[in-house]
Image 1 (spheres, helix red, strand yellow):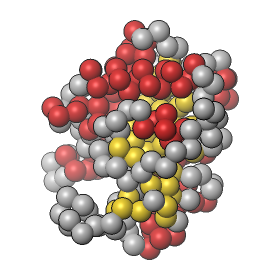
Image 2: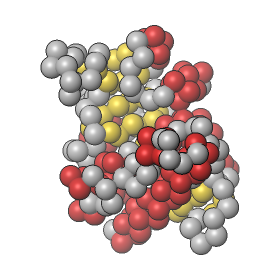
Image 3: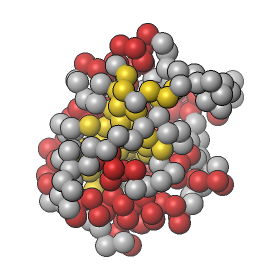
Length: 236
């Protein structure tokens, strides 16, 4: 089956990498995710990845009242770099070509992010992991994901989360919450739905990049989304 999307940006939450342990890494699970992505790349999809840092540090949430906002955000950026190094190594152990680019200079971790170079890498079959968020405090990794997606001209953003789509309310608190198959950016913003932060959602809307929200618990969902199957929620 052919792929609907040729080039994508996959945003993976840091918490998803931790699995049931909640912190650190669940390498068995990460290997399954990486194997799925590797197979898709071998079949012609170009992939960039942004990973959150929540399995180590959640910026404002963890630092609230204890660490100044700018410092807390920078700690979160460093956590994303740790995640990129780990996932990059898993890709390489599986025989995939992968590279880390960082939003700021951090010698020995990855090369400095360059838009044209990242596109060239993807065209050569490399999976490019973007570390360090946007490189600036006050911007989430969701916003960094949309920013990188716009810069590399991604056809879509795959938002791989611990929840299987966008709901009318928090399904963990409200059993009557309804999952949407499709929803517009405007409605997400108007209803204050917790898809991405408002900056990220507005940026995706301004650049007309569809966002597909789905559960990473089943890594094969990545392939299903790429093939155009109805999985999770599509925001456009």
